[in-house]
Image (tube, rainbow, N blue to C red):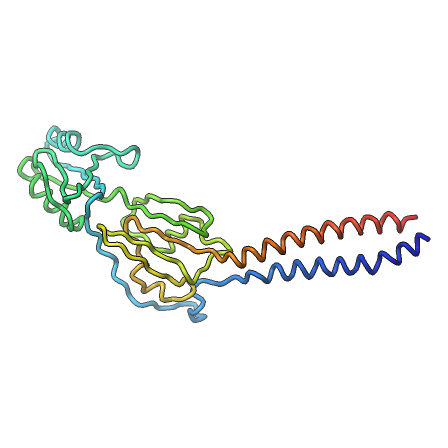
Length: 263
């Protein structure tokens, strides 16, 4: 009787095992990996069009680190301690908030309009004014609020503050841990708000046109939004559930088969 029982379970066990294999193989094939820049030629060296680095202009709500140096230690200390403020651990030097009118308030100098200037032009302007109070004056200036956000189908979404004044889309995705397996690489949006002028750019990460896009270099406060392929996610979740059920059934029938085959 046990032999009959074993014979009756053997075909059923084979069918369940085959079904399990089919479910797993189908599940793996439902989400094909789409490589970035798939239209690039297969070559060890690829030349891309030259791009000009973006010119970053000072605008309202920017936070600037301005440090003064020179031969008179007391005057230098006055400039670096009696002006500006501090922001946590972002900077040890005094920082200045550019107000809505594009001005900053400097020690001894008073209000200074720097809206629309580059860092170099603002540095030269401040140096000329500081020269009246300090011998061999030297001024350094940099942004301390270059931040961007990455949202959606990435491994570590969030807002990131960086010390660099120039960062690319690829570097930004690196901060966020890269796209997830369900990201739609052909439809990534860049939300840009520059002094009230808002725009949304569309980026296709599967094409080399990314490297010549005006959004390749980020600007302050850009938001990268990566959309999700919810249909693929749903299919994978359903296959995962079916695979779990089939796996349990396979284990149960295998156990029964092993127990009965020993008698």
